[in-house]
Image 1 (cartoon, one colour):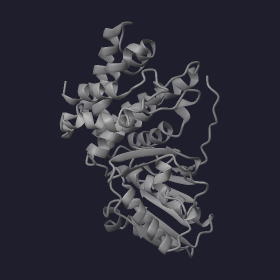
Image 2 (image 1 turned 45 degrees about the vertical axis):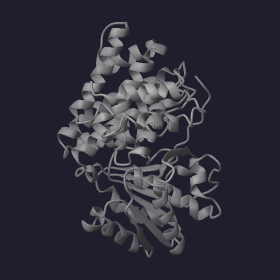
Image 3 (image 1 turned 120 degrees about the horizontal axis):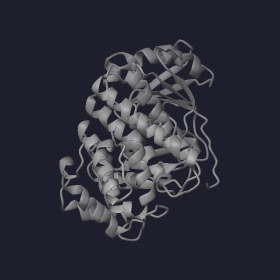
Image 4 (image 1 turned 90 degrees about the vertical axis):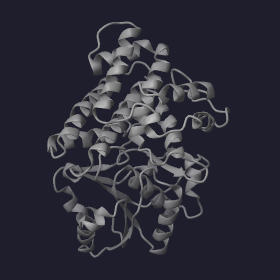
Length: 393
């Protein structure tokens, strides 16, 4: 087991009606003006944001708004939010939404206390934030795990780069998780969430490391639970029990718990980030579903023992050979199909001529190899995975 530091400072308010505490919670940070960052205008039109802002205003705290954050959030939109925040002299950021909104809010919060920095430099690992405004979140979709993670991801539309970076300043001070707020999430987005939550832990499980039996058991438990309860939420959107387990799995899958003692490298996420940078309309979870099984088929021979444990524990496969591993990968692929997820790039509208371009982008024009993984991936390997993933099986 590798040395590690486990740091999860985010305070979680979980359960029904927890959002009604928002005024009391924010008051403890003594802000004068809160910026509410959100995505869909539906939250404004249905009165939810007004309800939240009124609870904050009752404490004598002013509120301003920045909306319109889209899936696969862009750097350009984040720059707009930075301007709104500075013009309005906000001193607290509250994100209401899912991962895209939360990630945008993180960078906006950093910009207020690091005014000379370009936030894109964080995503290029040229600089790191040295401070941030206090910030909180109200989760309305369980998927990205941004509410408890140290990660933030933005897309630079001009350069077609989708980059994430890690910083402890990306941690929210608090998050409110009321599963009832996810009842209206569509079946498609629920399915995308199932994939993303699962993948955050699946990829950690297959990261390099040894002697991490407790961490492994925790990871396998999270994967089993998101498969079970995510599927129940997909079938029965108003099932509180299912939505609650799915929402909590989202947080545990991406707060660092399930890779402690192992290296950290979300390899398939890196392949997907290039995909959705080229095709911004591709939902992140859908892109992951289209890629993981091809990655697994291409790389499993370098880590057979771990793959065998995985397919036995998660998919109940028997046997100790290549056939058993391939059967387990097929079962995962069939699970994705059962929740309406794509299992090929072709289904996502990807043009075959773009596969080489994507591989070049992912490998930084053949200069970068994805290392610290049991099967390092350079340009040739990345291209092969994209090609394997192109046609539907």
